[in-house]
Length: 338
Image 1 (tube, rainbow, N blue to C red):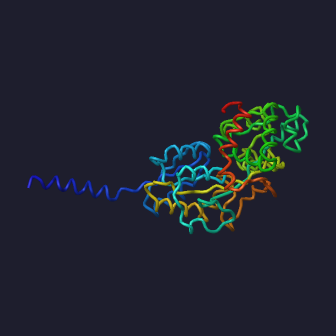
Image 2: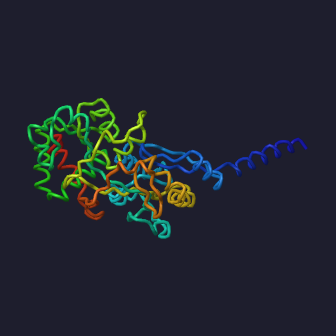
Image 3: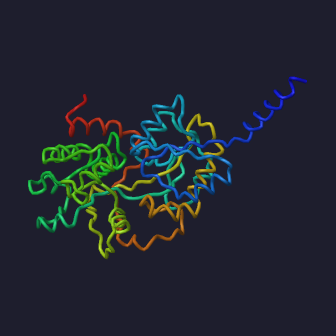
């Protein structure tokens, strides 16, 4: 009977393995946030452990998704948007999504389930313009004039989804040749390029101690400034420059990763992101509008001027053209590449 204890140990070991929680790996951009109690409730309901893998800006995140497609590091990806999903699909990094998961809501995202949406546009520092007694620009072309030299910072469209969105808006508004001619003039007028939104907004933007009073950000950013201010503000310290050719409607979604280990859990997580509880939390956590209907907004959103028009190419055009656009932008603005 010497073998009996060994069998008991083996049985206990196998039993422990059988009840070990499954792990759901979520690849997300650096701005992704979900309330811990909500995430804990999801884990309790499904019996799964959720691991969030943050991969920088959405552009960097999608690049990482594609580079690891032969050995996927995630089961579901959040934050893939209408400017980037075509790139991921062309690379074969996404799995088909059940149609019922993408139904309903105010916006849609082919190939994914829409979770939220917002508007990429120009923000300006009100105090800087008041102090320098400089009128606000009235057009994109104004930003090429000497009075606005060294005032604008944008994100690199090769690594940043807001950067790519802003580039796409200029092209949709002006046409490719005129848009890139404008970009050349912006370069010559002291345009600064940052890697991503975090660097542009929190390092280069004058509101946060940088030297640039105009930044590519979001139409909801002024509301966020009020919400997070240590002082009680009645007016936002920043404003939107909703000029023609500067507004892109960004739709963010969640998609299943091809080759992911937990496809059923991935579907459950996507449904969780579209639930009322999560949708209600999105506006004051990620500063986007909820994709689902009948979700009330926090009163602070009165400081978020929602554009009445935007210059957003369709997803098919973005998928077909973005690689060429980014390559041309790199040559024109950074003076590199072939």
